[in-house]
Length: 321
Image (cartoon, rainbow, N blue to C red; front, side):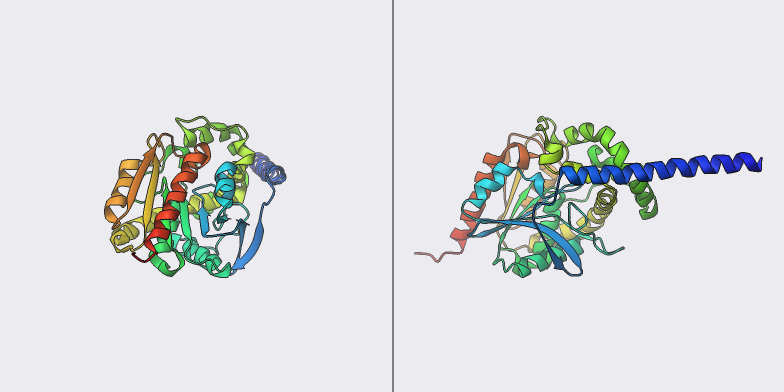
């Protein structure tokens, strides 16, 4: 009996070791396909990865859950960088930015890190563009660091408390840090490869997922062990932060625009968009054709909308004739 148990235990440990090894090989392969694009800057004890392009009025981009700075379409970034200074940031724990210290991954601490980056780069009241969960981080930034934000341009933002995560991200909704760490180190990367297309297509639906989004859009980075672990923590951080944040939306005193795809299947426009518009004084909401990933599928329309937000902010700052 003892011999059988020893053999079973040995088989289990061998299998787990094989998955751990496979996960690290997968990580190295993914990182070779999607190398780091920008610079590393130490902020508040962690290294943040960012891309800084162009000159002019600053526009800061914050990506969403399980994302990375490449999630914003190249055509969108190119268009804006022609006349503006565009800064794209990997949120803490995402892409090539280091995670926050253990137990410190809250939306407020993510916003603190981004406020530190804005200060370090000497950005004067930038327009902050937040997509999806990045919209919630942008809102937290504006609520807690109003001196660091000139205006908000929120694209398909997560703004309201909800009981359940979208099905495309349900595999990451593991409340236990220990269990999520175990899964991230063993099964997340190899199994993530198997279901990647299905999950990514669900985020884009009903629009088709662009070809090569896995690499050109940086999305494959999300299935690395540390990225999977961080994304699950981000979901918990979002859940914990939104109730108190939503109560504070009426206190926002800066230009706020909201943009949604009418067919978004990840976050409901009438809940996360309209309720925010109604809560923030003077906020506006625009809807266009498309789904949740309009930042990648509708670059020209989104660029025009962002430029309109910049122009509106500039006009508000001009004295009356």
